[in-house]
Image 1 (cartoon, rainbow, N blue to C red):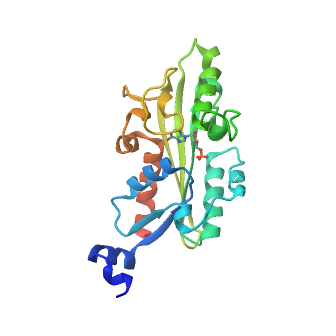
Image 2: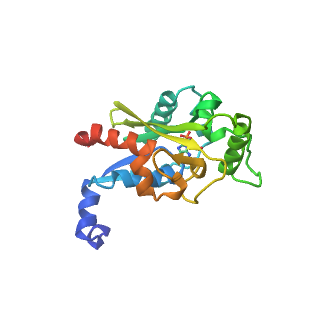
Image 3: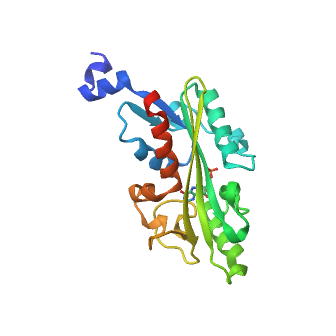
Length: 224
Ligand code: IMP
């Protein structure tokens, strides 16, 4: 008996009808957040690069050399679209701190001088460096925002791009253990919580990524 006949009716239907979309990220947290944003749309499968057989390549580290989130997001989407041949989602995101003149911005991932083999994780090193950088700004509020540029390239490489932002404030003492990156230090405006104290669902309600991808879903859902 072929594999097809072992599948439950719903799975058989999905195999036949599912549109496979690649999400161009190696960040499992981002992937989890974005998958839950697409949950309501049936017939879509959001896959990460490993799931479509694309193992990590060193050249991926050079996909974000630009000064804007827009250019970096479209660079990632184009690269993964080209090598996979699949409709592709990507995002470029980061933390923008007012009194640091917008830093770390597009360099959020590599803000500290962390390197592979260091005893702490890259996120921990970035958070330590962020708080150190803010120490000489005790006379002002540490207002900040997260920014996300979300991109979709369809099978013919037509591009749609949307932006989401969330305002907040950096706190010195981290709170919470969920999320990733700067989340334990980012107090979300009009809440008493950091993103690290929220479930994925709650974070998506407020977050830059939630806002950008909800807009993107609205723009592309009729084409899917
Ligand atoms: P990207 O993978 O080049 O978009 O880099 C994103 C970097 O920005 C991450 O590695 C984090 O340092 C930071 N960042 C972006 N979005 C978030 C978020 O939702 N939570 C925490 N940090 C984030």
